[in-house]
Structures are given as structure tokens and as C-alpha cells.
Length: 124
Length: 124
Image (cartoon, rainbow over all chains, first blue to last red; front, side, top):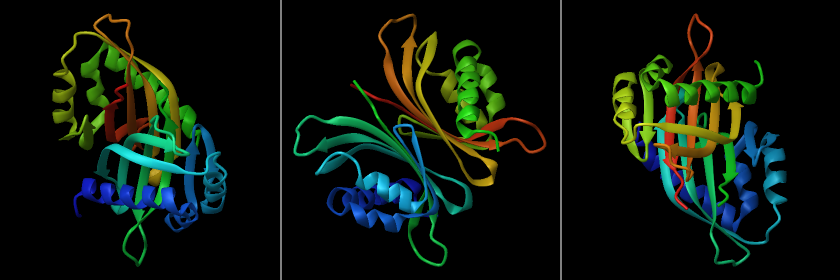
């Protein structure tokens, strides 16, 4: 397998790039059995996850990654652990966050989709 | 399966309890294919992981968990995402950390072992 950290980093560039510029396109990265836990709220499946992500209370957001760790995992998957900063609606004050993705390879296609997704803000 | 969050919380109580009082006993929770990424440093296998954890530069530590998220994952496993505070050598100033564990069930026994482990300090 290629280097998990390189794959994890490329995934983050893709994922947060979509999140910050074309959030609705993230639907391509989730499937019906994907799970999201967002600030403790549990959501199951791509449709519910997209509904949650599209309802977040800001107009603009920018993600800046600070650390990206990754390890190989089961079934050819990759576990990615991110820390970084959010900038919301043009604000200059970073809001710290951490996020975990478990990625699994698409069957019969290149690339990875998100099986597990857990997001937390890291308050002061 | 029992509630992943309940299992994740019970695991954290057990894991950090051992870490804070009898660090060497953590060896029972890792296997030869366990992976640790600790502040970006990659270590493979229970022996190497224990060597790393036992060499950390403090005498006493106390872990306080603040958030514990968990989801079911492949092969009956559980993905656990923790944020919390560390108190080192009797200090009163919390050091924030985040940690991810992928737990897999022991074959032929109850309980879980740590397949993936990623740890980061969250600097202010």
C-alpha cells in the first residue's frame, strides 16, 4: 500500500477543499452506512450526514490543517487523525478542531470513502 | 453489539487508569501488530509501544477525559475518539490532548485490544 500519511494528507486536501468551496459535493465521499459523530451528535448515512453538514450555522468556512496522522487499518482502509483551525465567515480568530476519518477503498474504483467520521471543536 | 459509546467509555476508564497507576500493565492491551503514532512518531508492535510509553519524560501523570466519542467499525471493532487534560508530576495546569483508538475484540476472550492508537497534544 502507498504511504498512509500521504494518502491521508491528499484526502484532507480534497475533503476540506470541497467543504470550503462546494460543500454539497462531499456527498460523493459518504455512503449509506457512513457514520458521523459531530460534537457528540450521531448521524447515519450519506443523506443524513449531508443534511447535517449543510445546516451548520455559517455561510463561509475555511479549514487549515495543522497535524495529519494516519495508519493503515482493516480491509485496506486508512485511519486519519487531523487537528487544525477553522475560520468562519471571514473571521481571523482560529477555532481549533480535531477530526477522525476511517477511509475505506471504493470497490472497483480508485479512491476512498468515509466510513467513520468524528468531529470535535477543541475549546480554549 | 452493546453501545459503542459505553464500551469506549469503559475502555478509557481502564486504559487511563492503568496508564496513571501501573503503566507497564498496558502491555496487555497491545499486540504484535498494534500501531502507535505519538506526536507524529510511529511505533509498531506491543514491545516497541511499551518501550515508548515507559520512556516518556515524567514520573507521574493523570489523565482526565472531557469528551469520548465512539462508533462501531469493521470486524466487531470500535473506534474511540477522546479529548481531555493531562496533569503531569503533580502540576495543576491542564495540558490538552486528543487520542484515537481503534479497538478490536480479543479472539476467544472477552474485551478489546488496541489495533490503532494515535496521540496528539493540543497546544493552546
